[in-house]
Length: 511
Image (cartoon, rainbow, N blue to C red; front, side, top):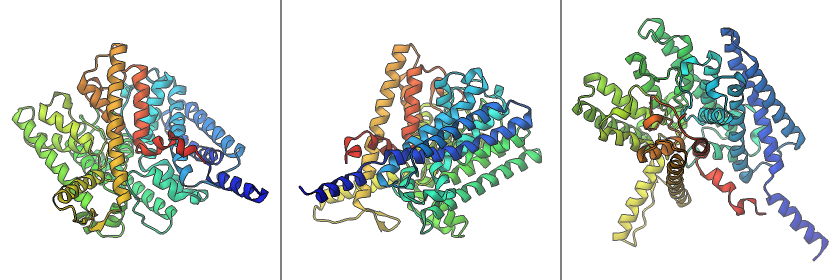
């Protein structure tokens, strides 16, 4: 072997190896800039006369750790496709750890245990909406706003925000965006990934501002006495990311019907593909919504499930007339989009309505939205793939491409969709089994339905489950083992399973 040949092979090996140092440096840079988010609750703390040091200390620690990683590891110049999975996965762990610090530093007794603080933070950034806080009203306003703001940051995605505002992330930008955005594929709005990310975030900010202004107007004219300026901002920050954290322990139950209907409308908007929404609103092509296969199916499923729940509520004589329709529409939309708000305790609903709530947990909203779970697009593609298989069983020689919006879908994409669905179901089953086993060992009263719902709600980033973890309850009774397991489920669910599982394979680390 010649020296030149050996050197060439070594060079190729270095190029193909995962750049761990560069990935960690990029995570550090993201964490450094994200530390500025602590200034938002600091401002509220100053305004309400509450301690500011928990947020300033958390921001300083995040900035210090991020700067040390970035400087100490020499930058992130070689970020590529493989590094994208590592960067995105580690970034979400880092931001959850950062988000937990203000809870720990605040001395709030409901969040003074590290595992509880991490659970609450992961639930916030992943827009899950599950909580271990029993008495939300007792939280300081600044700490409450931090909960809300973490969901808003996590909604469109930390990486997407970074791509939009940090020029250095042009390198490997597509790989990072593909690992971050929910759904099988990215529908670009511009030639450059950075421009696409910027437009998505601008739309996200504009819709959030519009909702806050509408809620302010509702409270200002006296249509909802509970909707003050703080509540308007707080719920604006958690509706658009489909997060579900509320300022009340009873969620939105005590707010006026007009507020609840407005929230329903914005949950539907947020549940649409943001690239499609951009074309419909900014480029003034509303017809795009009606011609999109996924948007039509989402609307049809929302309508169908709402009718089923409405009829079941009326027949059970729990509530009737317009209130029944409002409860059915609100809860169906909230659960299907993964928001997790509640206006009624569906634990008390009849069996069919409860089954509908469990079922829509597995649907999700559109790909390219902040929603979790499987996503309507994947269900649509799996359905069309099964239909093709049935046709080819009868006519083996028939060549039928699976189409989406009249365009054939690549077979590799279809295989990826099937792989995701199978992995998702498998992880959900394992998660439910772990919760059930741990509940038995730790003497927590958890039934089969509750274990299934808790696994589905955390993996799908939905939030409320059933039983004590239902819409008007909390996850506080779970043991530490279950809390840790559900924290992992929220993380892997937000990252759409594959980026995390890829890291666990030997081939990923192999040169």
